[in-house]
Length: 393
Image (cartoon, rainbow, N blue to C red):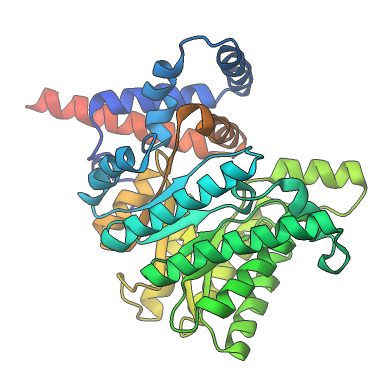
């Protein structure tokens, strides 16, 4: 088995300066009040054109992002590759609303696919539907595709064309593409499009991957049904399993609108369904490929044990672990050291445009129980280990 406590392996790629920066960043995001003030101050500085870009780039951007462009991010990718880690280039632009921006995002996603075609260190591409379509259009379509007004139908047709353009590029390049999960009130249309693309492009292998957020109480059944559908219709299912990223928003909306919350009653229920979903996929590897996106040590260990029990090779191309850049290096690097398939999500884009992603990352680290504490404890352990080794020398 594997130990995630080996900080020498986990932080082998990090200088002492990198560790100190990470320490202070996680120390800050551990305090909700500081994060709240920091978000306000950052928005204020950007709005008033204060020169803070350099500060952001040298701190939180450097920790969680690969660069401002694909070219810059390749430096990060090459560094990860030295330790056996693959890269998922994630163009993390949010909140755009114009056609030209959507078209630019499509072109950028296809550029990451083309990069993967010629670069063995980039096995996947990824995109979000809200990056190429207005949220309001997705919300309208989600309520029922058969009763769309003319304007919404036109916009939905454009979305369909953009998604097909991306998935066809992935198919032609033989580079699988992940479609990220989003809020429940737009997820049905995302699932529908992902299934349409899977039927079209997954006949020989999983090229199009949909995502399931297991903090939803209905997603385990969803995963099982997707496997049944793939078998019945003769295609390979690509699935990315995550716990989820919209919990507070989902609960608040359900409460305000008076409907039953789609979120699991507690963390234990979410963990149970997540691990069961992983097991279900491994029991159906003949028709599935999976990316297990998790920062949870126990889930990672359970997957390893499932692979051992089922005599699945460590480097089986149908199974990937994935974590975000700048987080859970103790999982990523220790898994890679033992020759499992591991990829880091490497967000990139112009600093101003990536800022919403970075601020959400800070929020999520603050809200996830134990995440920041664990990161800090491991960083402190490695700093102490390095100091002790210097004294011994």
